[in-house]
Image 1 (cartoon, rainbow, N blue to C red):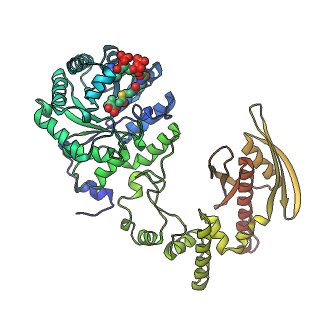
Image 2: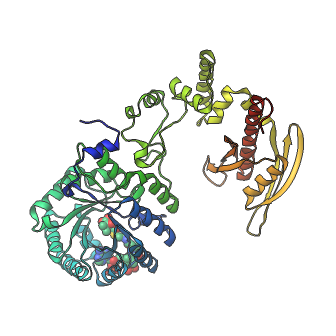
Image 3: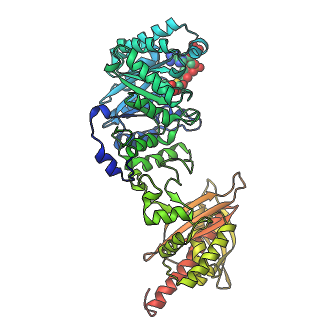
Length: 531
Ligand SMILES: CC(=O)SCCNC(=O)CCNC(=O)[C@H](O)C(C)(C)COP(=O)(O)OP(=O)(O)OC[C@H]1O[C@@H](n2cnc3c(N)ncnc32)[C@H](O)[C@@H]1OP(=O)(O)O
Ligand SMILES: CC(C)C(=O)C(=O)O
């Protein structure tokens, strides 16, 4: 076994022959959008299609043109705009759907009609209410009709993994004879397991005449959490196209996640000697975009793209990563477009990571002071869920700990709403003296910050303003982070309250207090001459 966390070494060892190439068929815009609540508007679909095209996706399934006018228009526009990818439109086994899909992808450099029908006894009897023979005829009709419109036709046996093997061979043969160029074997309800899926694909490749002339494809759902494992099993048995989605979006528990199949193939190239055309360094960007436009947060511990995928909290792991990242990382964060691994400070952290964190924050402590700070840090981490940089600064820096005494928020009233301009009235205590100011702004947050600025004038830039809900519900505690930057010095302030505006004002004032201390230090170091 070769152990490496270097994507470059994995790539270099791969002999890139066409027979080992795995085509990546992304269906974020079709099956992904079928995920309840994940609907995207026209502009959002354009953005997603653009990044998929740019990152090297081979086939983009842009939608289901017969589903609505909106779907038709977005598929047609993506077809016109796409520079590299084949653009596919999905269609049921009926003339209207197929003609609509053909029309939508007509202007693509390379278009594909993807037509499907349920083949399992359950789907035939209950959903379609058709006999096996009628479904067989529908396969022939639909593929033939699609092939009369376009050269590139994919046919899918919906619920293939619950279809009788002999019948599946018959309908796949019919689709190939009618002109399908790709045969997709969906595990529509996420029912199969890897060994069984290997057997199904192997059987089709061995038994169906003409199987060698088409590309076999997988489309695996994640109902048992096996979508990626089944897709890779399909590849092992000879499939050369994987259907997948960014962040694993899709019906119910979702589809195989693009980022997982791509990185599994890349990272374990020693046991899976295949390759894809995906620029993996674009994965994090694509994931963030899809999460933003669908408003679907990515689960923290999601493989490859989760917030914790390259984060380490426990001391033994942090120590290992500091000495050599490959002790606890099987791929580099850069290989998927994440800037760096992160060491998260918490109750499981050890001295190596704590010293590194202090160094990052600009503190070098002697042995005794370090040990003392470490004991206080552990005690704090035992009590507090998140230990932020400011908490650590406050542990080792008496002045920073008292920073919040300089300026305090005493009262805030904000007038917000549609009629604008939004207005804020704030009362601060500045070095023991009360001052009140009123300001308008572009929204209530801007008005609040302008009112603070009227009392504490400064030129600091605001590179970051972030709101997190700490608890759930409409009475959630909001936690606001504000980062301010002035003359190369950056500080972060945090504030919490059930009122987001109050939390924002506290965070802003907390950052200003820290900035004032840093300013004073620079001033003192330069003998009182610095600005
Ligand atoms: C596994 C998958 O992901 S399949 C793709 C799922 N995607 C979608 O459904 C896309 C969004 N769907 C829609 O907008 C609508 O369902 C439409 C426009 C496609 C159809 O709407 P309607 O005509 O109102 O039909 P409805 O959705 O209620 O029922 C589906 C019909 O299609 C039939 N059908 C389902 N799959 C197929 C197929 N592959 N080929 C032919 N007919 C099919 C059903 O049997 C049912 O027919 P019936 O009306 O004769 O009983
Ligand atoms: C239409 C097909 C490919 C599908 O989405 C499924 O079977 O899950």
